[in-house]
Length: 159
Image 1 (cartoon, rainbow, N blue to C red):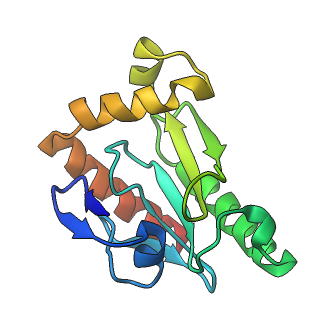
Image 2: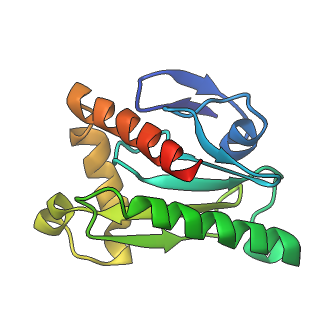
């Protein structure tokens, strides 16, 4: 599969989650936090500030494939990431999503901003449309720089 990230770099990989987890692919702004079994990073393809992804380092599809200890580690990382998002002043709320139809387990922490309220219903059914809109309209130099600064801010908060 060919991936084009928000910095317009092209990457070829079989599984993006595995490639990020094993260090073959570096997401924009780099890894925010790495634990024994998970990595936290900015979404590489959708230019939404502080749209964070937690990827499993092992190739699984479902949260039900985690051991109890791994699930505790995941929850702790998700909790700390959500706490970190509180420092981003223009985030109104955060939706946490995990789809099992994906090829690789990942958890989304999707922030909601004022611009989303102006254009989209506050519903899970709007998520794909928000992503498409962001890819078409949010790939400005100013927004990408803001995303990268925010990644650094979150990383520093989580140290």
